[in-house]
Length: 101
Image 1 (cartoon, rainbow, N blue to C red):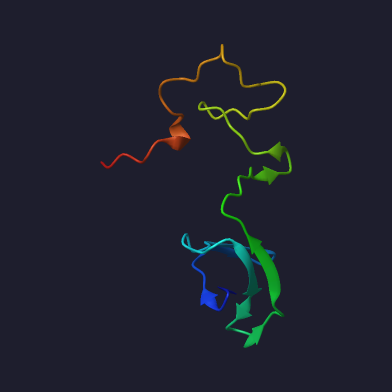
Image 2: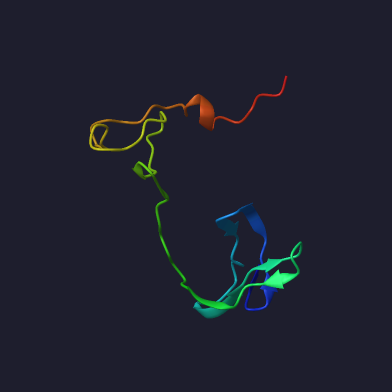
């Protein structure tokens, strides 16, 4: 995968999705994006993508926005974020780094 003829580091690749890292120093603008298949010796037709200086976003899955409390429960209408509901002082087990033994 290239953006403006520059190879992009791939974070993950699936049949219907590719996660790639845009170079941090890339200026805001519109650039050609091309996906190449080495195995099939083929390339996609170029698509133009917009790169913005700031583009905050939230990942969304089948259950909606993927936002979680520190204890791992999903933030939703049943578990809202409130100023009066402080988060636990320790992260949940799934968020802790593995312990070397």
